[in-house]
Length: 336
Image 1 (tube, rainbow, N blue to C red):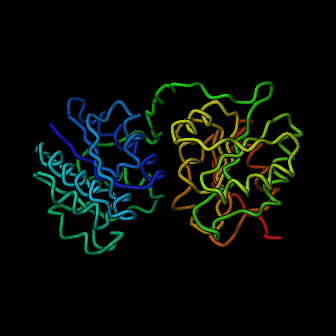
Image 2: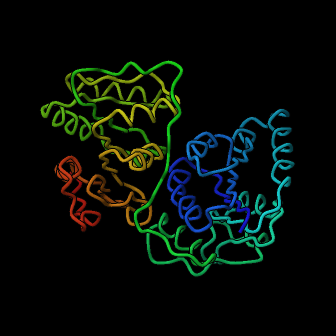
């Protein structure tokens, strides 16, 4: 095996959770060149992994929004970059039209994709001349690792290796001093995935009483306003300035605790080894949650938001390293 192409186009959490596949491939095929095709919005995160030899990116998401001629030219140029190499194997572990088109355009002898029932979009099937085995009964992230390992005939270590190395910042971040930082990622992509502001405030006050300084990141003006509402209810809490993903990653790395919704940045906190609690309210914890370990756990579930007591119990577990093996199945609590 000389050259491998991974196709995982979006989004932040998925890109982060795919990194262990790179580590698995690197162990199985130490001398192989490993390339990755993704949306340009997430290319920098992939570059944090030194085991990836080449990142192929195109502004697909940006073009969909703006329809600019410059973005279209960049996409055309990226196709030339994609076809500049011949691949022994192309691994589409995304399974939608856009990833299938990339896999089809790549010069690959074997193009793997999921079986029809496991595809995100059935039409993607046109691109593949090989199929992964039936999707295993496990979470989405381990499922990717199993699919690739079975297809290429190797075994993997159950402990995921994310191998992310953050680039240094030109200007160091000015973070609060004198107390450990707890970052609360209250923002999420959809209203139905939110956790109530009063529950965030109660959680923040409890952590403040334990000596933590609460920091609230945000990405949109609406999220900033919600952060300000929470901060007004939590003594000493600060709303951070708007950060780039790299700056936010450095804040995460400097934090003593991360609590947040099912979002990409909370997946990143888990990958960076920070004590992490992920809260679910509208999506499947079993399928999309972070791995349960001594420093991480997911609580709540689809249509079953956790109460504050459940979240505080989970926080205690990750801070003391006493998360039980069954913590991933902790009761979700009642909605009040």
